[in-house]
Every structure is written in C-alpha cells, then in structure tokens.
Image (cartoon, rainbow over all chains, first blue to last red):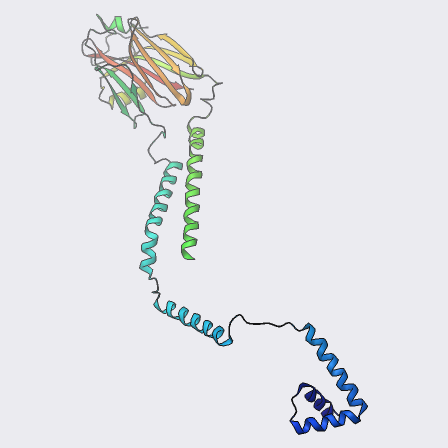
Length: 171
Length: 163
C-alpha cells in the first residue's frame, strides 16, 4: 500500500473526500483486506485520542476576547501619553522638606556628639542660688571657668565685723 | 523608585540620629566624669579663704593668693589690687558625703559631693545659713562665694576640685 493510498484512507475516515472519491475508496476497502485492517486501526487510534484530548472552551467569544486586549492596549497608551513627565524642579520640590529635615537631624546629631569648640563643659553650668536672698547674685564666666556668687551684705555683715582680722584671721 | 530610595536614606539618617543621641551621654560622661563619680573613689577639693584689698600689704605675714586665681579675679568685676590667702583647707569627699569646715571665726562652710560632679555648697555666718549653691564642679572650675568687707575690702571663699 502506497503512502498516497494510506492518506486517502485517512481522509475517507475523516470525511474529507469528495463523494465520488469516497465511493471509490469504500469499494477498495471492501475488496482489500489490508485497507480494511488499516481503516480499523485508524478508527481505533482516533477513538483512543478522543477520550484523552482535553476540550478547552473560552468563556467568551474569540472576537470579544481579542477586542478586550485591544481596548486595554489603547487605554494604556492613552494614559502614558497623558501623564506628564516629572521635571527636575518637581523632584527637588518634593525632596525639599524631607531633605531639610534630614539635614537638621544630621546637624543636631553632630552637635550632640561633638560639642562646639570653645565650650569647655557640655553640662549646663547653671548656678542655683537656693536661699531666697535678694542681696545675692551669681556671676558666671565660662572663659575663666568660674562662678562667683556675690553676697551684697552691708559692710558690717556676718563675716566682717570690726576688722579684717576678725573675719580673716592670718595664719 | 527614586522616592523609595530617598525614604530609605531618610530612615537611615533618623536611625543614625537616635543612635548618636543614645550614645552621646555615655561619651560625655566618660569624657568628663571618668573616675570621679563612681561612688567608690573619694574626690579631693580645696577651699580657700581669700581677702581682697586695694591697700598695700601691711602685714608681711600675709600670703598672696595663687597667681592663677588672682588673674581670674582681676578679669572679673570683683577686682582688687591684692588678694591674700588667709586660710586653705583640703576636703576629701565620697559620693553623697558632707563635710563642714571652719574657714574663719565667723565663716563656716559645708560641702556635699553629689552625683555627676555636682556639689552642694553652703555658707554659714555666725552659725546661720547665709547661702546655698548647687552646681557641677568639674576639675578646673572654680566656685567662688564672696562679699563686701569693711574698708572697701572683700572676702572670697574659693572651692575647687584638685588632684
């Protein structure tokens, strides 16, 4: 059996032959045992494949499916054409506030770690005059590293009574 | 994308800031208070009673005050021509310890060593409390209490931390 004859048998089985050719092939099958056997084999094969071939059905029609894709492409193209490109100034303006805050934080951190040159003590050197005395005042000089609490009592005070010897005994 | 990167940088900066703030007290305390405020070691102070006068030295026994102290006082509003050291008293204090020292017949002081190199200084005249000062007194810093005396002279009590 030639290849052409085999293909004709396949076409006959699929119902693809014209009516006249179909009659000829049917007559050939009736008188030829090999052709009958091959036809039976092809039928079995087709039936076997039919049971395992998954059938996929689109939830929508083919035209509607493609029109949806087309609409989505057109919409995306429209949006990208409308969206303005952010300029460098816009970026700068957006970044200005957070950038300023970051710089301020950085400066505070630097000052917290490194005291300002010239300030000898990071601790507050506040003198507290605790006695409620209107005649006392505090003088603070950080360049000289000293705090003076001056008591403005009258000359005849608790410390100087009659002479300096009373107050300040020489040793 | 760029904004996300910027936010990440900002977060890093904020984290660095908080870390630095958290680390700063430890640094400063180790730099300025090392060894003196542990509570176990005694800290040495010195109290001096100084007399300031514009008169020439009448008594040769009077001892001039320390030249550094004179320099500091003469750069202040409490300026006299001569300063004499009338009395000097070493004071050794542990944390929260208080000592009372008689500087002259009428002048008594009380010093308390508090945490973080703070001191509480109290001045008594004739047994009565005249003044109280509480402040940090690290090495090199002077706490001076003063007042007018007769004949346009002045008295000073100088307190400082020493080695």
